[in-house]
Image 1 (cartoon, one colour):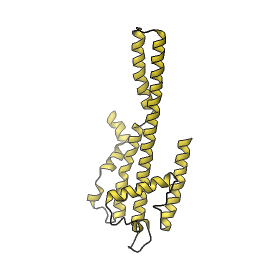
Image 2 (spheres, helix red, strand yellow):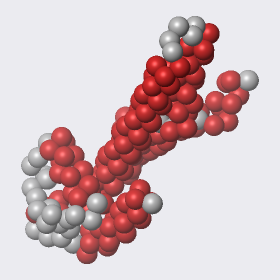
Image 3 (tube, rainbow, N blue to C red):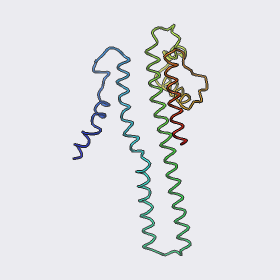
Image 4 (spheres, rainbow, N blue to C red):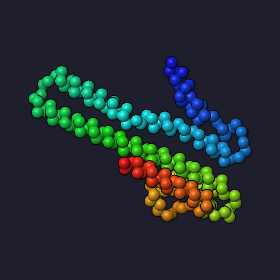
Length: 197
């Protein structure tokens, strides 16, 4: 039963994420290989499902209800002391839930920034045909930098663009990059509007 449900839901995503596309030599085009690597990001959906607010709320309620049940069974304190302890536990439960919401929101924003930044980098890299092209990839010297430095730059760029701050230290250069940035900005406005409710 469990294996059938796994085959029906997450198996395809896990299978695609574990295929070593770089070593299969399906194509010589590095852009397509990079896009195949992005398929591994499909597994983030499983991570975000584990960060469910409602599931954690049920777990925390269960823990606190178990403690309250013990207090009811052993009424060794006066009513005012018990009520004070109950109020403190309810406040602690609320604080834990809000901290969890903030942490899960930050993880979602960082994941989104990583995904958008990686897509922007791939587009910028593969629309750059020569070293004279006026693109994000050439203007900020990404050809000479390592993968970690490039990742930091594009995630920083995507985060400032998604949040619509746009500090101006990194900006799109070519027309295709500007078009993509327009959609990133619109998506950022939608995301932050949803967050602010």
